[in-house]
Image 1 (cartoon, rainbow, N blue to C red):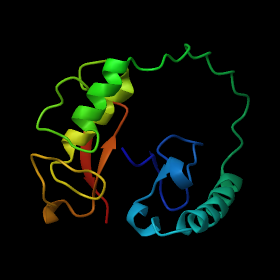
Image 2: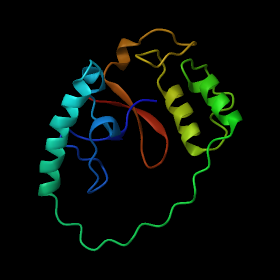
Image 3: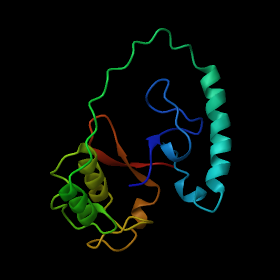
Image 4: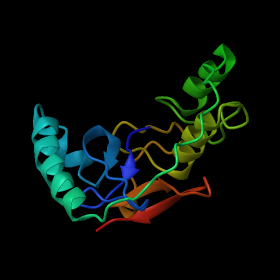
Length: 154
């Protein structure tokens, strides 16, 4: 899965106060920045934009400390195997195991792979081997509801 936090061209996300640049961001420039060293240039440009955006943001005020997250457990070998088999470099019509097993990220990766009903870039589906021109400019986006959907970005 490629992408990151959906952000605008000034690094703003949909979460107030959260800015994202570089590999953490999804700006729609992914295809344009994959040439050698373009990522570094993108980080300079978007890093500067993020800094200017942050300076214009209101002070956050007193923040409560975040709750302590539960310790992360690595996925079980069966989950890793199922995720690679069903949502890795080849995706079948239905993820046989990756979509039904914990952890949640494995379910989201599998669901996102199935939401893109074509082969494009590094995403290759055995059951849909060709690029679908009708999906040009569409990105798979996952919101707070954790349901992947296609959005058109112009």
